[in-house]
Length: 293
Image 1 (cartoon, rainbow, N blue to C red):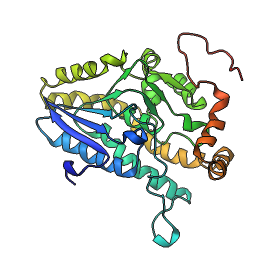
Image 2 (image 1 turned 60 degrees about the vertical axis):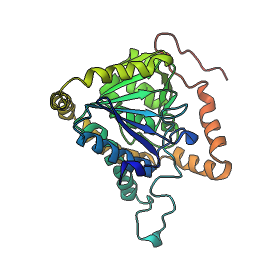
Image 3 (image 1 turned 180 degrees about the horizontal axis):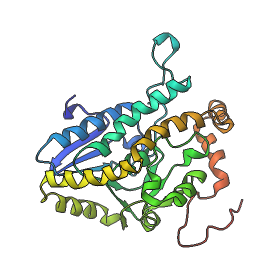
């Protein structure tokens, strides 16, 4: 694969940084397996380039990433006759999620520091991408969450606790509620948030600083911190998260979601799922109160 051949991302190198831009704006940069393959390739290409000191991960259009594109994941269209895993058995389900996760884990494993530039929606699979980054910078009005936890299973990647602690991780995961970039910064889910019009300058300013540091020193300091997190079980938990998500797929609510999706379509199914949660937002520094129906 050549970087010029990418169809789902854009890749550029400039002034000591690589920018990897999710480039499916018509689908709010939803994640297909093809996108994950290109992302993994671009990450290691940047890591191999001695002119690159850091990597910026961002999205084209009005969202960072709206989540997984369920029409583009690898089990789609597979049948028993194809002699390939279909996702119908528990082990198939885990295997296919682990294949996706190996691509995503490259964000963590590359030696160069990675910066997530979060604007607009950063939902479901979008959070899987940014949580693997070393530093997360969000627009104040970004919307970050995993609403799919309400009906589709558990989180197949799970670094939330390592960012914001167990109570906030539970508050967000158990309800599927979302949080603004500003509130996410206040609980440590992201490094910081800024006004939307300042987001690019904030991220590029951090990259400016990293670009004058020897990449070998950046790697040494990134990797010792990540090794500390691994000693706390961070990467083992990612393997267990796939197993746990496959387990959650057997919940009655997931079967009901699939039935509704087939009968009523995605838009109506999501409307009915999310309607009881009001605006679906967490408010960190003010009461959430009761939901008015």
